[in-house]
Amino acid sequence: MKVFKFGGASVKDAEGVKNVVKIIRAFPSKDLVVIISAMGKMTNAFEALMEAYTFKQDELRDSISKIKTFHFGIIDKLDLSKDSLERVEDIFSKLERRLERPHSDNFDYDYDQIVSYGEVLSTTIISSYLNENGVQCHWADARLIVRTDSSYREAMVDWGKTEALVEEEWAKVQPSHGTRRLMLTQGFIGHTPELTTTTLGREGSDFTAAIFSYVLKAEDVTIWKDVPGVLNADPKYFSDAVMLKRISYKEAIELAYYGASVIHPKTIKPLQNKGIVLKVKSFLNHEEEGTRIDVSTFSDSLVPSYIFKVNQILISFTPRDFSFVNEDNLSELFGYFVSNGIKINLMQNSALNFSICVDYDETKLERLMEKFSDRYEVFYNRPCELVTIRHYDQETISRLLIGKKVLVEQKSRNTARMVLMEG
Ligand code: ASP
Ligand code: MG
Image 1 (tube, rainbow, N blue to C red):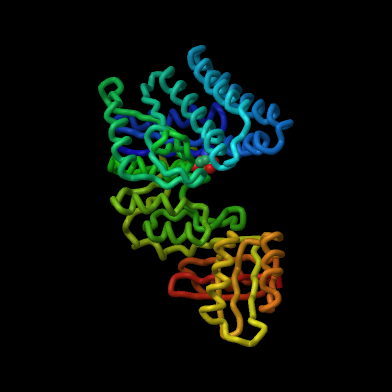
Image 2 (image 1 turned 90 degrees about the vertical axis):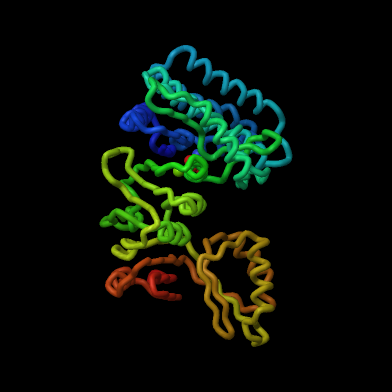
C-alpha cells in the first residue's frame, strides 16, 4: 500500500480538488491512505478565528463568515449533492455552537478544538466529491485514530495505541469495485485518551502521513507539493535553484534542522526506522519523478544546498569581571534561554566571549539585556543572516560573500555556516 499527503496548497480551490482526484485515479490498483490538510490558507484563517473568539469578540462574525464563504464557494464549484452540502452545514453548526460558549482559560486547548475543523471540513468535502464521482472512499476520523497525550498544539503521539487504532480502522475499509482500498483522513489532528481533540503542531500533516505509513508498513509515502521536489535552495533567493533527485533520510533531517522548509524532521524518523521511501513530488506534474528520500547516501554530496535564515541577531556576552566563559556562566545563560523560549540557531565561544545567533525578537532582546547587562558586556549586531551550505565548495562560498561581511564562520567536513551582515 501507499500513503499520499496533500497539503493546503494542493486543495486551495475546486480545480485543486479535481486535480487531487485525478492523481488518486492515476493509481487505480494501489491500496491508498490519503492524508489531507486544511484547504488553502484555512489554518491561518482558523487561527484568526481563534484570536477573535478569545480576544476580539467583535471580529468573530467576520472571521467565521470568511471561512464559510471560502468552503461553500468550493462546494458550489464542485457541484456537490444536497446531502453533502448538509453534511458540511452540520459541521459549521457544531463549530458555531462551540463558539457561542465562553472560551476556557486554556488557549491551547481551545485552539485545538477549533482549528481542527479546517481538516474536518476539507476531508469531508473531498471525500464527498470522490464518492459522488465514482471513486469509492472511506472517510476516517483521525480524532478517533491518532492517539496523543494532552499537550495541546504540540501533542505527542502514543504509538502503541495509535498502531492498534490505525489497524482497526484500515480493516474496516472495503475494496472499491473489488480492486483497491482507499481511505481518506485528516492530517495534523488527533485525540487524547479522554477523546478530546489535539493537534500535532503546524505543518503536522506530514507527520500524520508518516504515522500511517509506519503502522501500515507502506511501500512508500508521497508528499505532493507545489514544487517539483526538494530543492537545493529557496527559489525566493536563488533563481537557479535545482531539484535534488535523491537524498538520504539523514540528509533530509540535516536540511530540515538547518531550517530548510523541506519536511518536518519528525516525519523522517518513523520512515527511516522501517525503511519506507519518502517521495516529494509536484501535484502539478504528477508523472514527474520528484525527489526520492531513502537510506542511500550516495547522491547526498552531488549538489551543494543553501539554507538562509534572515532577520537574525548575533548577541555576544563577555563577563565583566574578566572571568572565563566557563560551565557556570554557560549553564546560567542556557537556563535563561530555555525558560524564555530563546532558540539558538548557531553558537560560538572563546575565552572571554560567548555568542549566539538567534531569530530577532525585540522584546526578548530587551529583557535579556536587562537581565545580564550588569554582569556581562552584551553586544549585538543586526540585521544579520545565517547561511548554511551543505556540501560546500570554495566557489559557492565566495559567490555568496560578495558584498557581505562575515561575523562568524564555522566549517565542518560537509557543512559551512556563516553569520553575515551587509558589508
Ligand atoms: N493545516 C495545518 C497547517 O497548516 C497542518 C498542515 O497543513 O500540515 O499547519
Ligand atoms: Mg504544509
